[in-house]
Image (cartoon, rainbow, N blue to C red; front, side, top):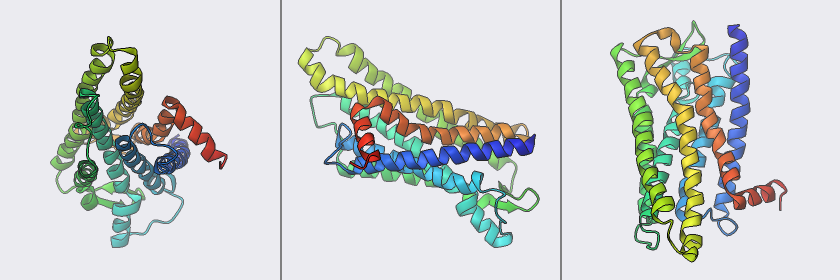
Length: 297
């Protein structure tokens, strides 16, 4: 039964990783063609491009961790540990995943600034500030995952890369840190910001003139709906894994690497895979350029 489950997990990761990489690569291609497609505004161009890059990296580094496992002879010793920390252990996958989460927070922050004063360009982020926020999100994601680059090692018994912590208390604290920084705080922050945005766009400005609604509010409503949808999908896909990671080190070690835990990781990969489909379903213009790209027009 365990072997069958492992095969099912591998197949799921393979399908999701391929869809993830192809979909997000297509998103990057379309966004970079600014003369053809601006994705509502330049600021969102940059933020969604950063999100797509992070999601594509999740796919790339999920493959050696969860798809190719058992299909090749993994080196042991120092080389094996080094390979675990940078390729087969999934550390870069989790770094990219955290960067994807922080990108969603940045998008929520950008939406809040734009919607607060829709008639003014003062609140739009400058290129310098925008690049700074993106760099901070990646730096913070790397710092959050930095301990894994020291504790991940290859276990010859299980033939798998595992976390080898020096003290039992450390993974417990680390799990709480991940749940707080990647789960509770981002979700709470985005719920707060989008609540204000929804109030501004759907409640407070309901009495605006028809022209103002068409020019300012309707386009922003569509972009905001997309961002809120991405946040909901993220919450559904990430929270189970964050909770199980804590359970694994607080309650029972058997949870880590169990079928349930592996499927929770599949959900995190599903989050990165789903994002391009959200763009496609929410944006008519995006659907048009997807068709052009696929037909080589």
